[in-house]
Length: 276
Figure 1 (tube, rainbow, N blue to C red):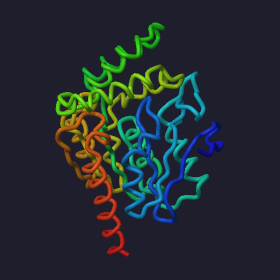
Figure 2 (figure 1 turned 180 degrees about the horizontal axis):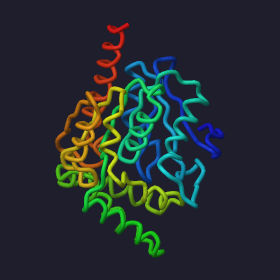
Figure 3 (figure 1 turned 60 degrees about the vertical axis):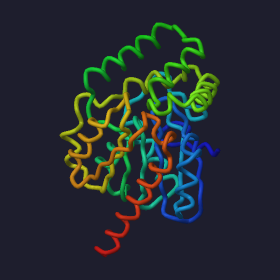
Figure 4 (figure 1 turned 90 degrees about the vertical axis):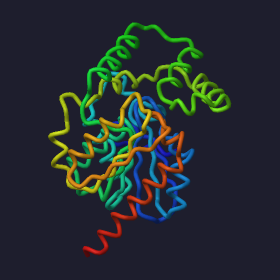
């Protein structure tokens, strides 16, 4: 994966696909951009798009930035990568924290965004999610490191749907993967504190680019109601809920997620063509 100097740091990215319209994908907190390559990148490349994924600051091999950073730093990273690759009129996809980044980018630099799909997103923090974030930060700062097996179980219960949790084969596979990748990332501590506080919903009424919000019915981290609020705040935004999925819905039901992304991008492109 190439590593380039962007916004004063090293950023690792991967450019997949040919000469089609570019799609930049922004991953969520503590996760690697390589996760997009399991399902979303192949589907988008097959649909004719050029797909760019990258590791957010804080996720190796991008710069660790362990001293901390802001959501605007992450927005500037995406702006810098778009500029470095000389991309013209991107489509963007984000999930969780990545959606927050995309929302702020669409607000600040609409000239760079043709359209955006926001997975598992929110524009404010409610009491339960605030408590969860504070607890995670307190655990991280305490220096306690959970045993990998326990950490994997917690992550599975938190991020998957009841449907997946009842499938013994799926659960075993998830536990094995998450146990193998358990452990704190140096930049993850900074990512934990990047919540939309105070509420960004009033600001999102000024977003002018076409947006589609996809929520997951069983998402405990960002419940569908919080995603609906974002869709209602952004003028003209569309909204859908995919059933039987938790926070990792893009991995639990990739076919439905990929269909939602591709159909939205094509619908927006058709409208823009008619207007010309």
